[in-house]
Each structure stands twice: as structure tokens, then as C-alpha cells.
Image 1: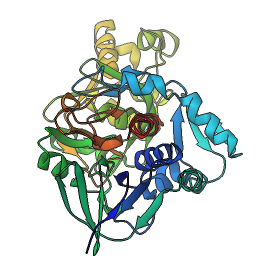
Image 2: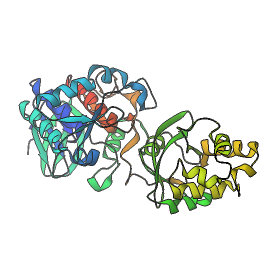
Image 3: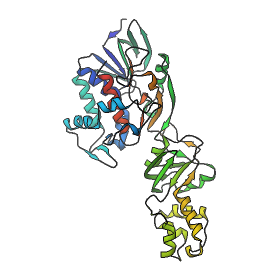
Length: 392
């Protein structure tokens, strides 16, 4: 049976794939958008607690990780948060800034998915879901894709199937298999924006499950000041999710439990409250259960007045750089995104096209570009999708 012909086939109806298809369709291209899931935008729908943190107004290239830190600059500069916000506003979708430049829908993430589907419809995009993507072949300047029992062909193919994070949503490493099939290199994928697990001497901190407090988390040169949350497996919360993208297995993680306290605050407490204990002093700035655990580990019994200034200074220094050695992460099942992916060395930063295979493109999370927590990964999806959509 002959294959149905299109100008472009986009594999993956997530954020990047829908944006790419809509832009190309509205340029007059005949576009086929395929997804094995039973509906489009499944990750969009669960993002931001169901309200979709759709961009971040502070987007800048230095807030993305990649083997090539310069790769994302071109696409991000040509399609900015302001561009996506303008699209959202054209559809009358109400939104708000939560914290740190993060924009969320006032209503539901369903509004973003509906908007993208409408944009695809304006471009006449043929959207098909709910069948497995089978063989993908290339020859005579055409890509041939088996979808369910049907065959489709086009001179342009876009890989927009994301990474393996959140496999319960149907995520997989399909993009990497396809990239390797066409000779593209893949930077080892790993979970990012993911909770960390604790063991060994740190295991007692798991008993603090449910306790949250503002901290500054550090790994290498990276540092994030937000909330940390103790869990029954280890550490989570925004500060931990952020730093997890920079942390490497076997390395220590440093936590400042008093990021807002003035230097020398313990010595000041000794002067102002000499009869207080270390636990009481910590309890004034930290949740009680955490204060008790930290005081027990520091082990300075008795009143502050009985402690030497040196011992108190040492205790404060330890609290400012408390060292944990996570024994791992909660894996792709709990990771919000995937770090690593299709190597940018084999792609054009202008068009997202493979340098070695004409008219083969890769966009979004499938590529080795990973943003911070807070809407940055959506902005990369929009920007990379537009970059490819304008040229296919």
C-alpha cells in the first residue's frame, strides 16, 4: 500500500512537537503530527500542578545545561518568553507570576493544550494519536514512517518525542534510538530536576519526612536558594530539584540551613540569650524537628554561655555548609525532565537540523539542552520548535 505523502512528519505531540507543527503548518506546509499516546500534550497537562508553568520571564542561556552551553542561545533569542506570552494573551488565557519569574495559568493547563491544538488547526496540521510508531526509514530524500498499520512519507522529519522522564506518561528513550539509527551521537541521559536519596550516616534525616525549610543548596559552583523538603527517601523541594541537575553521583551536596541569618548569629545569641541551648537557638530559625536533629549531630550540650566562641563559630560554619552525600536519585520515574540527549554537536543551532542527515530535525527535551526548574524547559520547547518549524 503506498505511503500517504506530507511535507513534514513530526514525531511527538508534546510542547515542542505541537509548536513546531503549528508554525510549519501556518507557513503552508502539509504537516503530519504523530504520537503514540492516546491524547496530545500529556506532560503539559500535569505540569505546574495542572496549571502549566508555561514560561519564565527571566529566561537566559545561562539557565540551561548542555555539553555546549552556547547552543541554546540562537533559538532562545529568536523566540522569547514575550513571544509566547503574546500568544497566550491572544487566546485570552489568564495567567500570573508565582515566584522567580514563573508564569502559570490562572485556570488549567488544558488551556495551553487547547491553544496549541487550535494553532495546529489553523495550519491544517493532521494530528493522529494512539498508535505505536514502528519502523522509520530514509531513502531517496524521503522519510517513511509506519504508524500503527499505516505508512506515511515526507522529505522532512522532526524528532520531538522527549526523554525518558516520567515513564508512566509513556515517556521513553525512543528519540535516542532514532537518533543513533541516523548516526547522531547521544549524550548519556540522566534524571534531572529530581529528588535525591539519602543513606549511610545521613539516613536519620529521612525521619524528618514532611519538614521543609528555606536553604541554599550547593553542588560544585552551582547554588540555589529556595525551599528544601525532607522526604521518606531523602531530599526534595525546589532547591534540591534545581541542584540535582548539577549534582553527580558520589559527590557531596552542601546545604546552608541559615541562608538569611547574619554572620556571627550564634555568637550574638550567646550574648543575648546566654542560658538558651543550641537546640533552642536553632529552633528560633528552623522547624523544631530539624533544629533538634541538627543540634544532636553538632553535640554542644548545655547552655550557650558554656560554649567557647570557637565552638559556636565552628557550629555556625557547619550549619552554613552541612555536607550530605546522596546515594542516588529517585530516577526517571520522579524526574521532571531528562538531562543529556541528542548531542548538539550534530545539530544546527539555527534550524535544529542534523548536520549529517539533511531534513532530519530534533527539538525540545530530546536534545541535550536542559533548563532550570520553573518554566525554562517549556520555553526551550517553544523556541526550538519554532526554530525548526520556520524552515521545514
